[in-house]
Amino acid sequence: MPWVRAYYNPAEAGVMTSPLDGTQLFESAREVMTTIREMVAAVKGLSNFKAAIGGWLTWVTVIFTLVLLSVAVSQVGLLVSGWRLFCGQLL
Image (cartoon, rainbow, N blue to C red; front, side, top):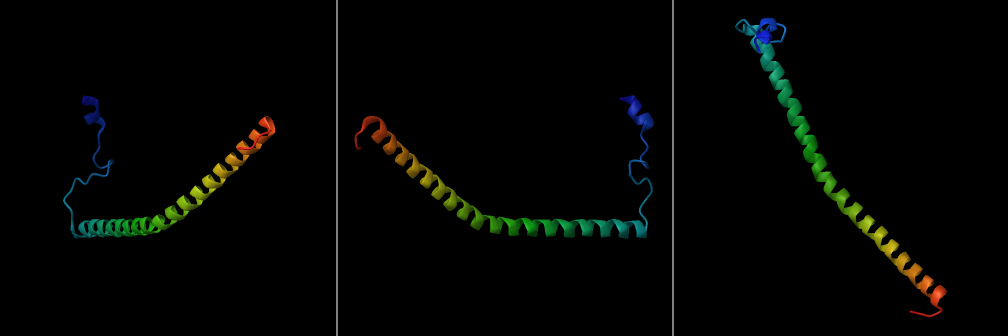
């Protein structure tokens, strides 16, 4: 695509075309260190979330199992009631 090269301006794209002086190098290093600190904080937050989610999942699983068990018991009760109603017999 030759037309891309004709309209490409490195300065507009944020590409440095001159060598770095001390100030630019310092600013770049500071931005890199800030980004690294943010990444470390994000990783710590994710590890804390991972540690906390295990306990929550255990309780949610137990509660959901109990809810399904109560639904199963009520379905058996409905089956017995329907059997008595339509057949007049006991199981």
